[in-house]
Amino acid sequence: QVQLAESGGGLVQAGGSLRLSCTISGRELDDNAMAWFRQAPGKEREFVAGASWSGAITAYADPVKGRFTISKDTTRKTLFLSMHDLTAEDTAVYYCATSKYRNYVAQKVSDYDYWGRGTQVTVSS
Image (cartoon, rainbow, N blue to C red):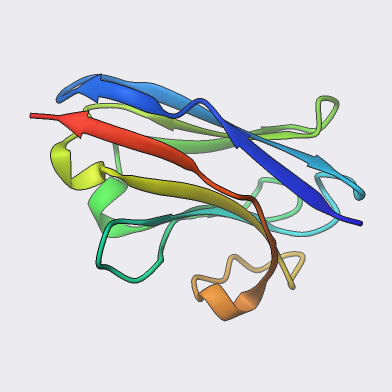
């Protein structure tokens, strides 16, 4: 049974930083590509950042480029999302997910098979 558990969310002021963590169990972190998605109230879940199985290929949504960084610690089986210069538009529940692909960073929700329960990020302006 593959399980993902996010942590690290919270309330932060605009311009601040947070680092989200996602720990995986039931499979190795580098078995497949992984990604972070987010969902704001009343909006669809959207891709934020993803990395291939090795981390050599990464992709970011345009709104977060230059501010967010995805990384992984294979020995700790943990995926990270470092977020800087946060704005109110970044307020959402953030989810990590495992991809159906290994060396391709997909950006559709349907390309991911296992999901965590999410962690809330709230940015106050």
